[in-house]
Image (tube, rainbow, N blue to C red):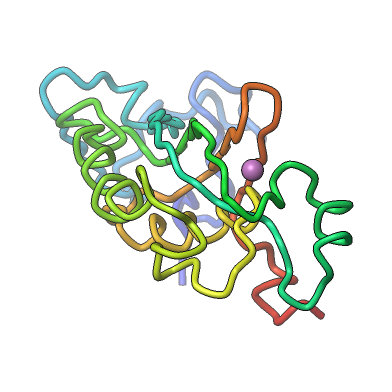
Length: 201
Ligand code: NI
C-alpha cells in the first residue's frame, strides 16, 4: 500500500520550499497525485486556532470552612499514653477546631464556558458531601463516614477525598485537598497512589 506523501515513484516528496532530493528540477508545491488527509476543523466562536490545538489544563481551587469538635485517642491506650501522644487533642471533654480546606480540581477548559467546572457546582458538592455532615458536629460521634476512625487531620482529609472525588463531573478530577486544622498546621492529600491501589504492597 502506498503511504501518504509518497508519489507514484516511491520517492519521498520534498517538503514545500525544501530542497529537491533528486535531479529533475523543482517539484510542484502541490502534487494532486499524492493522497493527503482531508482535515477540516471548525472552531467554536471565541476560540482561537492556538487554543484548539492545545486545550489548556487548569487547576481550580475552592476554599471552604467548617468548625468541628473532636478528640484524638485510642480506646486501647491509657489516658496517660493518649495524652502523651495526642496532647491537647486527647482532652476527654472534647475541643474544637476551625478548619479551612482548599479543594483543587483539574481538567481542560470547556471551550463553551471557559470554565474547568462551574465553581457553584463544586461548592454544592462540597456542601452536600462534606460540610453538611461535619460543620458544627462532633467528628467522633456524629459523622457516619468517620465511624471508628481516629479523627486526625490526616484521616479526615482522606475520608473527605473519598466523599468528593466521585461527585465531580466527567473529565474533571480531584487534584489536591489541603486541610488546615489551625493556621499553623495543615495536611495535603493528592489521592491514592498506585501502591495504595495495589493494596499497599
Ligand atoms: Ni484537636
